Length: 211
Image 1 (cartoon, rainbow, N blue to C red):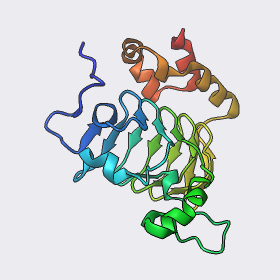
Image 2: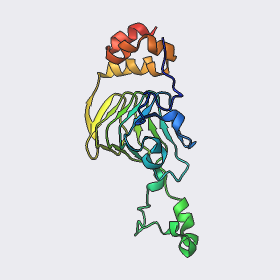
Image 3: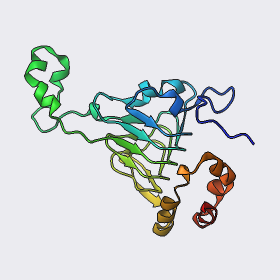
Image 4: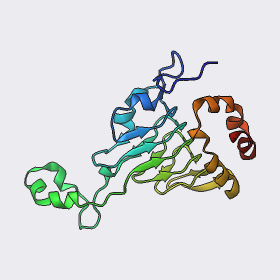
C-alpha cells in the first residue's frame, strides 16, 4: 500500500495548483509541518512571496501538520505594523537618510505581537487574512474571507470581519479528548491504518483506535 510522501511538492500528479508547503518553503522563519498544502490555480509556488507579507522582523510563521490552505490565504506579519503611540503613524524610518538616523531607535522599539501560530488539522478558507501574532488552535476552521485578529480556540469555527466565533465543532469534553489523542503526531503508517476513522469517525471512535 502506497503512502503519500510529505516531500512531494506536487501531491497530485499533473496538477500544479496544489503544493505541499514543507518542501516548497525555504525561508527559515516559515516553519510548516508535514502534509500541509496550499491550493492556488495561478500562484501556488509563490506562497512565500505572495502569502506571507511584511516578514521583516524576527517573528516566525509556524503552521502545523495536515492543514489545508485555500487560494488567497494571507498572513500579515508583525513587520507590517506601524507605531500608534505617537501623533503620526507614518513610518519615517524606512525612507532612510536623516529620517532614518533620527528615528531608528523609535522603530526598533516598536512592540512585537510575536509569532503567528497555526495548529494542526486547520482548514483556512478562500481569501482569509490572518493578522500578526494570532494563534489558531488544532482542528479549527477559518471561514472564507475572514479577517482573523484574535486567537481561535481548538476546534472553533470562526468567520467574518473581524472574525468571530460561530460555533465549536465538538463539546469541551470531546475537544479535550481530541487534543490528548493528537492523531497528527502519529506515525504516518498509523494515520494510514485509521484514516477512515480520522476522516469520518467520531471522537469516541478515534479514541478506540488510538491505543
